[in-house]
Length: 295
Image: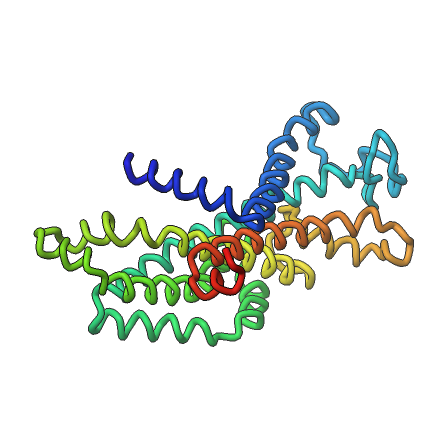
């Protein structure tokens, strides 16, 4: 309980003094609120009917009060489709980010604290993962591995997202191990697990947060890239899939920017919000950046 109180007070201080962090969190909160109100909009507009059902409305209706973003080729309300895509893309990014962060944190802490043979094996594995050509591998996997749900897709993306987190965490653990309070903890009779959980992990939280944010961004961009070439779970609407549909429908040649622009803008806002959060955290915890920015 004391740990969480300490973290809350520290985070509140960072939020107060860092404009980029505040802007990033504000944008991200707005997107999350849009996701949360999607079921309410669906209930008001469609009742119990699936809004992705084909032929509910006339196709290619222009934006209006009833359909703020118009309708698509299949007569579906574009606003609802975009909100569904935002929800699924965000959940995919969060799922992938959490899985990748858990793997990367475990590998980084084990590698940095244990050293020896553990460090040699895990560091080599992380280094090899960092130099793998991710895009061609993802395309091949998507072509030959049947992916029917977003969790499976998240697991595949997480496999290629944990290595950077592991290297970052390992570097911080190596630094923290040399701190006097770690020696004091060892002299006091604390075991390795107690030292890691009570002394090292609280100081790793900002770096874990940055790693999580980067993993979420990476997952959303990778998913969008894979979807643009028509791969991934076909039954799950995401922002990337909606962009791919829009290109296939030829909406640009038809001048129907109300269909293709919203998912692109949402991806940009997601990217900007998470990057601003990253930059804000970096400015608080990286002494070199703090010196440059003067914060």
